[in-house]
Image 1: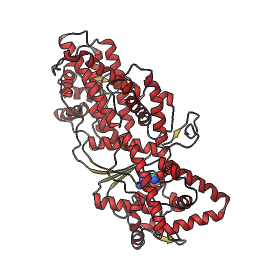
Image 2 (image 1 turned 90 degrees about the horizontal axis):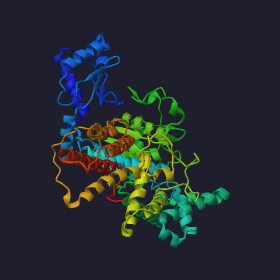
Image 3 (image 1 turned 60 degrees about the vertical axis):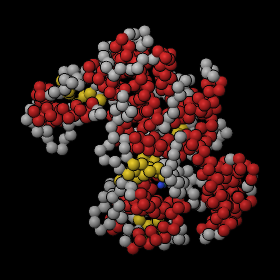
Image 4 (image 1 turned 45 degrees about the vertical axis):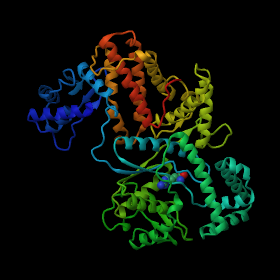
Length: 585
Ligand code: ARG
């Protein structure tokens, strides 16, 4: 099903043709959802931009376009406003037909892309034996939602958890594992115990230099393949991944691969040799570095921007003077693997904003290596506590995913307890609501803003929250439950008469636009969240002014269809955010 935006754009282009006006080259003719719906549902500035280029009067051009425009099957007569805007209001008969179509469409009006791409999405990626932080939480939810949406619109998505399972932290972990590990605690909550050990050793090294030396020696032994240390390392990684998988399962998050940093160890030395040989990297103070300066690229360097000087001081180091490799080296090897083995057309990195320089360097280096894969750093800001400072848990520690989920579900359980529900269903509903609240609080934010984490707000039934949205869904399911056996088979023949019905139908029709917007407008799941919120709001407006069960005939059928399609879209939309719904609450 084409979206209204697409249909209206096509018709506008036809109008240009019919009026024998060639739209100016390079200026796209577009139609957008109206920001102020008092004037219509869609709006176009086509006449204005075209008139400017063609040097004619915009209002006159708008009038000519309207004369030649055939949209009678979609809208009322278009209106010309202000300096030459075209306003379109979808007509009631057209919308009545639309909701009939949506009723029978599993995809709820969301088309598939013309060209499916192979997209690797790199997200979550916590570090073994190091505390998980809010960055990992944001990455996990944003990444999962983007993966769901990309898949839904027809791309071939590969999700890969680039776990930090190799690194200098293992020096401390190995020493701690051998000297101060609590085996019972490890069995119970490995991630927590490993982080405790890491912190404890870290503190000891501050007080006693010689311990730092011991840790370094342990690390070197591991890197050289010492059997005991390798065994410990493997155990730590496995315990961590097992526990992480439990959490991902609870969250409904799936990774196709868990190729952590260690997977690329063998590839690093030859990679650096190759970079040096090709002149992409050079030795500086004993280290192999990629610089941003022009001497690196004999031809045009597409990454030369005005900020180019920036990494002359901070070159991208791929091998330290002591021979050690770095995060960037691993990431370059990872790109090679993803392009070679998975034939990636695109790689999306959902990683916090502090790593911007790292990714700029990485992408620049890849370009110089002739890689044509499209790469995107999908960055995000931080999460703040209610006091506006770094977000911490009740225990005062920096927060990881598990702690947040546990606390959310616990708090949701208190709320669910007060509701009129069967005792046996309460745990499950609390699990759904708690997780939904945290995910939605994240995904309803513009990803670049820092947002304040507030339990009260995210668990509230009022406002732009998961409970509010799920409540709208539950309410609709309640209507159909009430009908029970008397529920009619819905008829796709509808008739829209009331403005509240019309407004709801317009919203429903726009689902097909917003899902694509998430990926096309800068990777923003918040656009979908905002849409769902507006949909729930519009639904409540409709529900208040249009009685459903007390109406009859076609009116009743139409209203029930509106309810059914709203519930389908709420469910599917929330699912694209990774959020489950419940039938009762
Ligand atoms: N483990 C890293 C961190 O915690 C994130 C890895 C992101 N992915 C990547 N390919 N660099 O900061």
